[in-house]
Length: 111
Image 1 (spheres, rainbow, N blue to C red):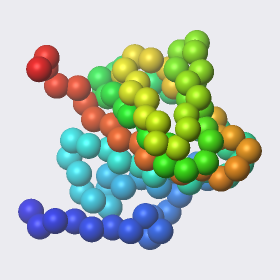
Image 2: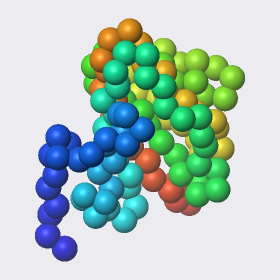
Image 3: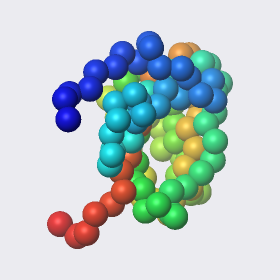
């Protein structure tokens, strides 16, 4: 298959912030989303236990936190947090615009 290219500005946002690139890039195993968050935006609380799908959230700019089960992880630009499939997670944006990159995939066997 040839390399796929997409510009995030050409992807429609869902839930007010989430630009999902999986379909545009035709990925099979990796989910990739860019979240362009307005001040005070919150993502949905969810987990990925059923699909055994882990995620990594990387804050590129702004200020945000991720609630993982019962703890809050504060992120500064450049910080990343990995979330296990069964953990409930929710993004909370700070007082300014933020951009996060979310990568996820189904876990494979022990390495």
